[in-house]
Image (cartoon, rainbow, N blue to C red; front, top):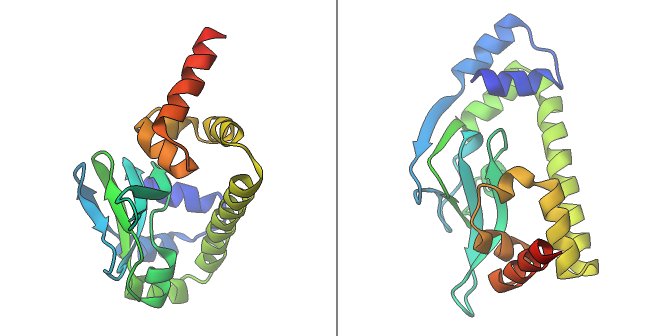
Length: 192
């Protein structure tokens, strides 16, 4: 819990009383490797903050049955279907643990009550959503304008912690390339 509070305090000020209220709204959940946080068709009932571990969000491509990775998330990141959580409607995708993952979770109802009780948290969550939106916009631009090799190098530079913890095939799916393509780039780099 302290790591999340420390993250929040980088952006907003909370009184000790507000921190106490904040802590009372959250619970801890552990997912084992392969366990699902959310499945396609379920409603996302909790917003989840990753204390430690790795999650992947994905859809299944109906044409070929492959996983299409929407996002990868590691320690100190959020992992939620924002649309499903905010509208309390069924999710279009799955979120699954890539490794054992410890989460802090807040229910939709508790989240709304928390924001009413601690108005400064509205600012914090706006900052988080702005960062997420910026990441999505960058991904759209890169997918539309850059070659696969450029996307791969940008991913390496932007997310070195993910690269060291996530299998190559998941990174390939996220980038929209084949695992063989990434292997060729890595071999080329080793021989250079």
